[in-house]
Length: 87
Image 1 (cartoon, rainbow, N blue to C red):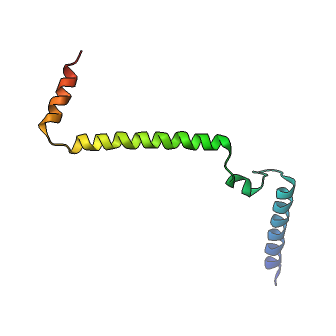
Image 2 (image 1 turned 90 degrees about the horizontal axis):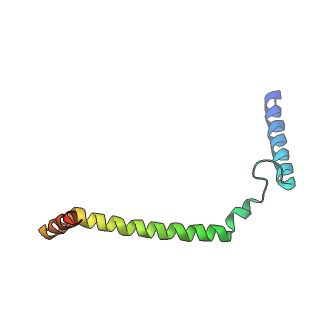
Image 3 (image 1 turned 60 degrees about the vertical axis):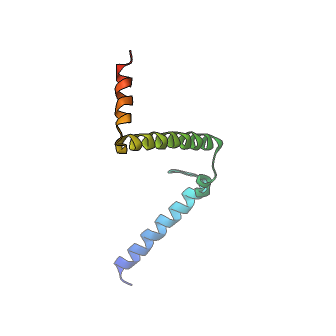
């Protein structure tokens, strides 16, 4: 190995040693166990439930809009006009 290859090996070794030290001591960056992100927290569950409900409501609204956009009957036109005439 020449000097350039040794330098690369030393630098990679230093980076790995620093990363292992940082992970064990909980220093810098995220500083926590990477598996902690996989366990759901109660606040995350509530947020996920709220987002699921919101997505469901939006899908229902999109379905109504699609039905309005693709419905070519005249009864729909009359219904819309009657809504415009309301006070």
